[in-house]
Length: 374
Image (cartoon, rainbow, N blue to C red; front, top):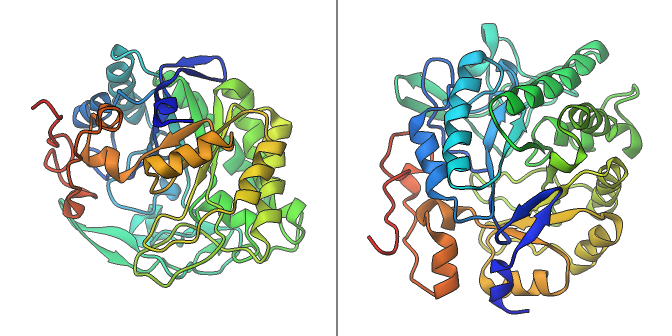
C-alpha cells in the first residue's frame, strides 16, 4: 500500500470521509476567560485544518472538576455550548465532520483549578507522579506545578460522573458536533479507573481487571445512549515501555499492558461503537507499539481503528498496509501545517513547530502558520 492510501475515501460509522487523515485531540489552552469558553479564534484554527477527513477537538472538560490545565475549554455551560457552535459551524462550512473529545482529568489537577479549591477527585487517594499541571497565576500567565493528592470518589459520586459524561454528550449534540470521543487515555480519570497503578479500590470499581473496566463500560453505555454507537469513539494510550523524560506523560504502564488493553477494546467491541483511537508513545526513542498487539486489536474490534503518535509516511504505510489501522492522525505536524494533507500528498516541505506557542496565547503560533502557497 502506497502513501496514496492516506488519500482514499473511507467510512466512519455512517459518515463518509474524503481521506484517512484525522486531526487528533491537541490541547492548545486558548479558550476565552473567564468561563473557559470556545471562541472565534478556535473556530478559525479548526476550519484551517479541514483538509483532514475527520477532526476531533482538543479535550473539553465535562464539568469544573474535570480541568487540569488553565484555559482549556469546557462543555457544561450554555456559554461554552454557544462557543462550540462557532467551531462546528466553521468546520461544517468546509464540509467536514467533527467530534468533541469528552475529558475529565481526575487526579491530574490542582486545588487552584478546582471549585472551592477542593482536592481533585479520583478512584483512589493517590497523587499522580511524573506529570505537572498548569495553573493560572494571573491574566494570561501561569506556571507548571505538581498535581495535588486527590480524594477518592464515593460510589454515588461515580454514578453521578457517568451521568455527567452523558450530559456532556447531549451538550455536544446541542453544539452541533457530529459525535463524541471519550477520553480514556493519558492517565486521566477513566484511565485511572482502568489502571492497577492508580486504582486501589476494594468495591465493584476496583480489584479485578473486569472491575477496573466497569467505569469505562458504564460511561460508554451512557454516552452511546445519547449519541448512538456509530457516532462514538474512545481513545486509549497503551504503553509498552516507560521513560523518565521531563514532561512526558502519555499514561500509565500496566504490568500486562496487552491484557489490560485487549480487554478494554473488548468492552468497545461489545458496545459496537464506531472507532477506537490508539495514542502511541511519541517521545524520542519511544517504545513501538508491538505488531502483535495491533493485530490483536484488529481481531477483536470490528469498527475503525485510528492511530496517532509521531507517524511518518513509512510508519503509516506499515500500519495501513497490514490493515491494523484505518486512519492516521498527525498532531505536532498539523499544528504547524494547517494544510498538512496537501503537503504530505505532494511532498512539500513542512513548517517547523514553535514549541513556545503550544499552550496558551493568541493567534501567534495558532492560526498564523502559513499555508504552502502563501
